[in-house]
Length: 176
Image (cartoon, rainbow, N blue to C red; front, side, top):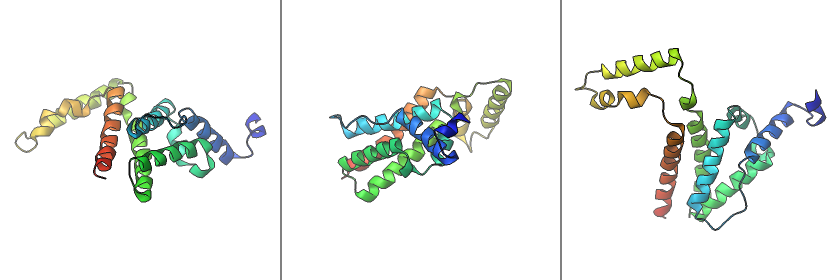
């Protein structure tokens, strides 16, 4: 009940939660680093927040971004950085949307789950199923069965995902 002294309703509480979560990595004032480094910091900050606070994804999905000052600050900085990279207004808007969805997808991957007996058995069975496929039809699935199904190092997974997304943005910017 004490929360209602600070928030009039559930919607305001969720907005406050979102502002607090995003405020944990909200951008510092623009600096002199290249736009790529600053955009990487924003993306990695969002992924870190989403991984650290599993509820953050649901909070972000249930808010109107315009009502959350920290979200607006991050979004505005991402738009500024994409414009600095030479993208049009429309492209910048698309890029920031793709970055948000990519960060959510990267952070939402179940790579941090503890491997209990059930999970270990599921991985073993799936690896066996892939390795049992006809090698003449699916040579790459058979060859890569183990790394496809086994747990990934979270840092490597996140870093590679951010590299993949930002490399695409950088390649597009280079063609401008």
